[in-house]
Image 1 (cartoon, helix red, strand yellow):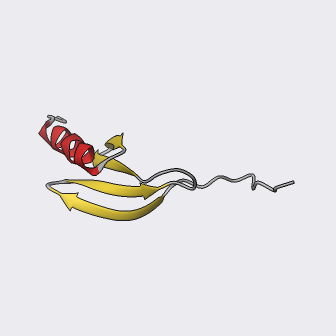
Image 2: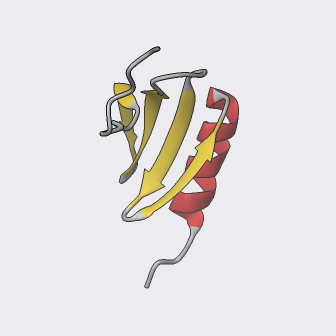
Length: 66
């Protein structure tokens, strides 16, 4: 029988690129494939490829947060 710890940890951030007031983080989950988080302020979008993450960041940066 395999023991699973009761506490689960989130993904590891393996890189971060800052751009124009936002950023893209490359995330490595405990199990699964690398994915990306694009954020501006407290708003984030998630994607499975870097190209889409760049598009999400562009869209977030173009939004009016006022």
